[in-house]
Image (cartoon, rainbow, N blue to C red; front, top):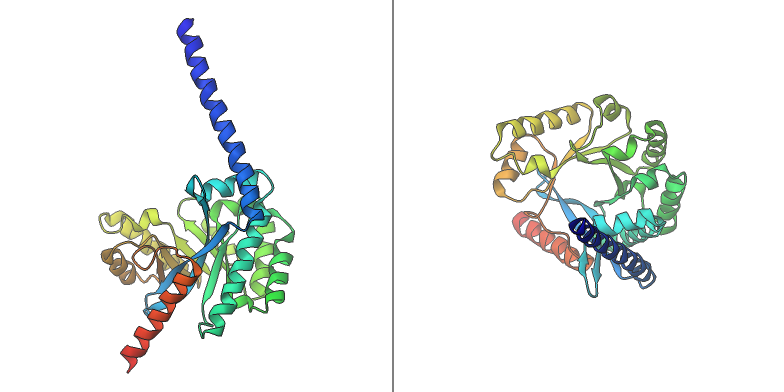
Length: 284
């Protein structure tokens, strides 16, 4: 009995500490949003046929003054649980549209920038209106924006998701399924959704060098996506061998540390300028 009581005390202490930490994180997130302490970084997408950067993924980064960088999946989960997800979403959308305008003024007017939306946002009736209004106010063409959603986010109400995505796509906004292969999307659902892009999860990309099965799966997904007139992005490409294999399999674009880590807007802008300078040098 004595040992049971001690074990209970340890368990209670851990739960109490975890609860206190969660409350502090929630409070800090409120403050970070008020102080604009959460930044939007960007990671390039590289076109394997054109050998150039053709797009970016916008990613939230929070450098906490005492915790350091807080994992996005952690603070996004807190935001979803506590009604802050709309503020986070507006933050990344506004930052993305602002950056599109900056890049457009520098001659990078053919980039398509993707933002991630959560299942809660996809269920909200305001998603379409909020997105289209933001595009109109910023003066940005819908074709420069892409929405990324996970497979599981469409499962609760596939018909509602289909209608919302169709309205966005009718305005030029691209629609992408992220982390494909890790959820439960059926082929019929994939064929029914108004999509433009399928992103193959890094789990499969990591194994293409060492596993014939993984290579076959990735090749099959690429062939299936192309049959549905969808572009394919390979996530998490980290080696030249992976890049070569994805190119051989017919993948359209890749994203990962081999190309570039996610970086703040100014550093990604320098990255784009260097790419353009290199292209001009090769052309001459």
